[in-house]
Image (cartoon, rainbow, N blue to C red; front, top):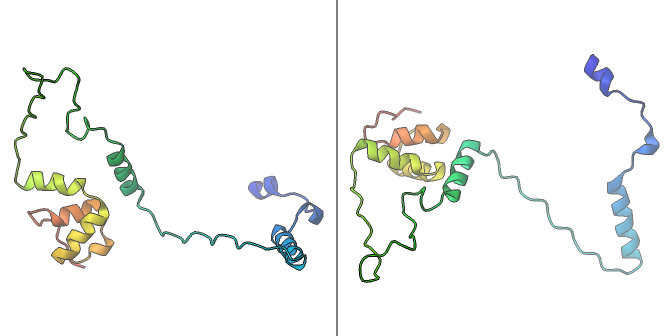
Length: 146
């Protein structure tokens, strides 16, 4: 009741204008005067619900610098003897379920969904990013039924 009382005001119809009607009247007058009228751009199509966490992950991925991505930026003094660039250090390849799980977590929800569809994982349409990654993990511990 207090909120309604606080927001209540006297209604003065003269203070409100029908801007849509005014625009239509202006278009009709322009057409009647022989002026050419350009069509307005159509309204944008709704895109549906947005997974905010997935959008944040994608934004962070795009914003990562080469240093954050595990690559070393070439520094001016990073030259080997003879003026040639020093060869990049080889990274030890890790394999196994833990590495596979990290790789899956780095994928977007859309990429995980595609992999889940290819693997025939039931219930994938109702899963979030983490559930999809879990279901695709090598252990298969997350495979759930629809």
